[in-house]
Length: 220
Image (cartoon, rainbow, N blue to C red; front, side, top):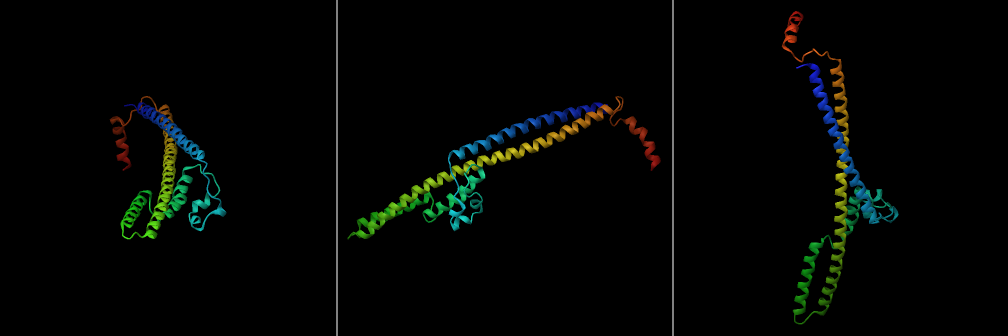
């Protein structure tokens, strides 16, 4: 095979790969921009703002991101993660002694069982019945708060997860563009080498190796 033909074949293949990577980079960039803009628009529509720095409690100030984003409107995936885990998560945890929405239901059922037993007792301990009714009312209200808090937290974390795909897409696009540019330069270099190479020059021909062997032996 002629050396010039081989250079052209590899160069054309490299140009094809460069074009393919360029298209891939454009597609990934488009997807990354969509994820970023969609996340921003959806979060901005909720009109959620972080508490001002001077209004943060001592416990809230322990989360560095709450201090960092203090007073800002929530519009990015990272902000959504911070708000969900360190603000909502903190208050949800303190709402019902660390119980979740599901476990709070079991707690309420236990109170109702105690109430039923107290009402069947003879004589009926009215003070205990009243206390249990008050506990059930408070626990039910707390469960409603847990439901709202955990739902919002889950939605915000979903938005954060969606934004991460956008970040990964942007990183993939950067790699695709860099490799595409490298392949383009290598292909152009190959075409230039093909242009400079004589048409008659063969690639690794037996004749060339045989002619070169006496010189190798002489140098040895």
